[in-house]
Amino acid sequence: MSGNNRNKRVPLGAPRLRLAVKGKQGYKRRWINDRDGRVQRAIEGGYRLVAKDGAEFKDDDAANRNDSLGDAMSKLVDSDGTKAYLMEISTAMYTSDQMLKQKHIDETEDALRVGADSHGKAGSDGRYVPKEGIKIKQG
Image (cartoon, rainbow, N blue to C red):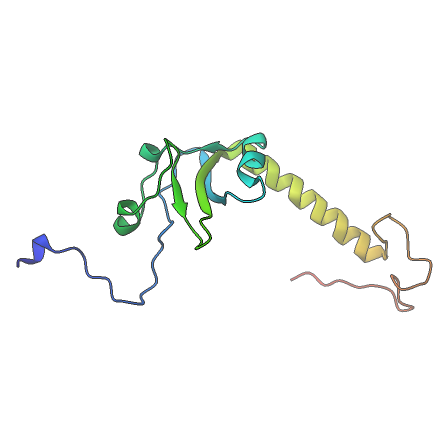
């Protein structure tokens, strides 16, 4: 058998990116497990399902074993039958979402620095602010 007719050899146990898909200009893509209404929440958050003809896998083997339902690209990801759907959101919406998440993290860190609890006040029992104060070093 000539080398041209064989599939590329991948050693058993070698790491493979079975869900890696090529990106799309202007969009962020991710796989979302179809559990607990996550796909519907993603749609409500601005994500859309990627059609199976719109997904190009980085691993040829993964592309040959897709488990698409209808027109949406999906993959079986768990032995309990859970599927993950490939979804995408515009880069602008993704960036906006990330900035909102970071704002919440910054507010939480600022509250920690002054010893505030989740209500914005120092704990009445003193547990949030030690006598020597709170110091948080960056990186």
